Image (cartoon, rainbow, N blue to C red):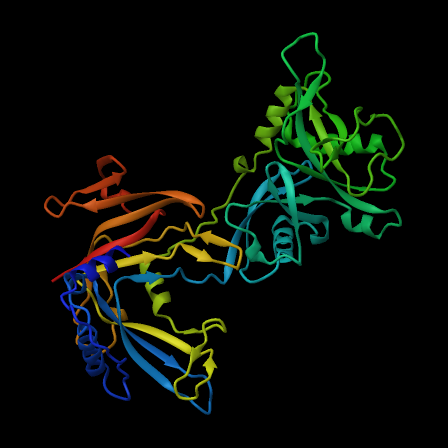
Length: 464
């Protein structure tokens, strides 16, 4: 928008005459490209055009066999807005809560990007050497099981940064076949706190949910005594070996709507009567702060063995190749064919024809995944500081010689969809030293700092 505004203010053409789009009609590319450029300059002549404007060849093919129209046009561009290559697979980090004596750990599961979440279960089961039918996976948010994931959930609903936890529940399949009603019960943790500082006042309250939630598989006949035993077994891998007396938390029924226990008294540990009904959650109310802190620390998935889910080897050349790759237009972007006069899901391809003196490359980090979900791609993209060569993307016989560029600035964005912070790196053309510009702060930086996953817009100057 800034360059567009500057161009309009500096445009040397004061009276703009109407022009028509130049069509190839079988003529050589360099002839049509030159004619299109001259037509563009009839209305646009400024220092902005001289420095920043390039030209693209757009080839659109009608898919109708009875039509077969091929439209070739040459359009100006001020910057290249390049997409990230479409991923056919997703690398999802899943934290598996195993059963003792096995240690809970993390796995990087590779699944089809357009698949379903049940593939995560099957791949994880294969890696962990357990039965898929004995696994339940869900997203943990604010120390609660926010949602369970299965065949009805597309993989693309799992966003980068989501904490995905898998619960290994042995006998889950057998329990489902049993005549008793079997169901899963989430287990949430809270700390019992004094309501005030008065030592004579024995009133108490509860903290917000804390730590890693657990899950039990029980039946309609599971007794309170058995529930205590199951919870003890589930907590065992995350608590110290030497425990103080009366460390075990109180077990209460959790009122999801109220966000607090349903009953004033905890479930008794020695009762042989069923204590949990389907749809209820268990709340572990901790009095011993030291043991709770140990559980929270040991149950932090970030401290388990983790894998790297970041993309490897992605370069700016990959992004430019994706930009120039032939694509089929969607129904929403259908092309009205000038020959058959119908909206068509045509194939479209872009190529470089004329390269500008100053090349701006915009990495399209912000993408619309669905009508309600936008995402920022934070993958690291490698880019050359010297000798960016775009010659391979230029149309043959266009008249352009080697298009080699050197980097002189980078705009960075730190943050996400809902907010962030911009900084910049720039090179002093006299000393060739690089500097960071961060609001009012400026400092010299090492050239290796210029490449980062925050890079958003790249600025290159053409060599001559």
